[in-house]
Picture 1: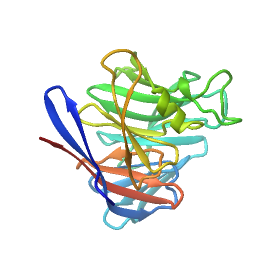
Picture 2 (picture 1 turned 180 degrees about the vertical axis):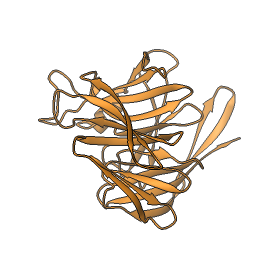
Picture 3 (picture 1 turned 180 degrees about the horizontal axis):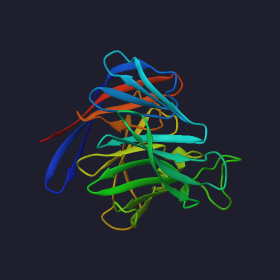
Length: 259
């Protein structure tokens, strides 16, 4: 894959962001929604199945499954806990929750329910002692909530006690590009920028929080081997994602180099 270099200014510092260079692929029949990884294991997310696999050879270690859950959509690991965004997609009215597992035992250990709120929860990360949660809307027939379309999608910032602090919407040009779907996965980098995915395009959208107003700023579209859905960073800064079509987990190198 060709390397793409993107330059941008952050305050008085200049950075170069190198696009993804593929490192490894794993066959994973349950690679339908997302993946997250530690230094030793990766966790493949299906609608209501989680499979823990060994990074060295991809061998399955443990599996969790429960059909009471309908649509797990992304994964994030913090302090031995796996957090997954969950919704009742494609049913309406939309309702969502955050589900939690112990990464060592794959025991389900907690849930935070949003109930019927502002959309369908697609991804979650913790950044600088706050939770960031994406709630989306769709324009597909049968999946569109009444009087709502993709423009109603929002990224919400909560404190650690789930009190809402701030919220941002998607820029019009990005809404037009991803419709009738929305933003399916996302992470926040150390420089406070966002990398987000479409539902099934092999693209990453680099966004910035606005200096004024409430609309995120779309800076770049970066090609990737990852085909949409939930993405995550491992402790070494590698980017993990899936190809839902080929049912593969993909590990790519992502580096930000200060100059």
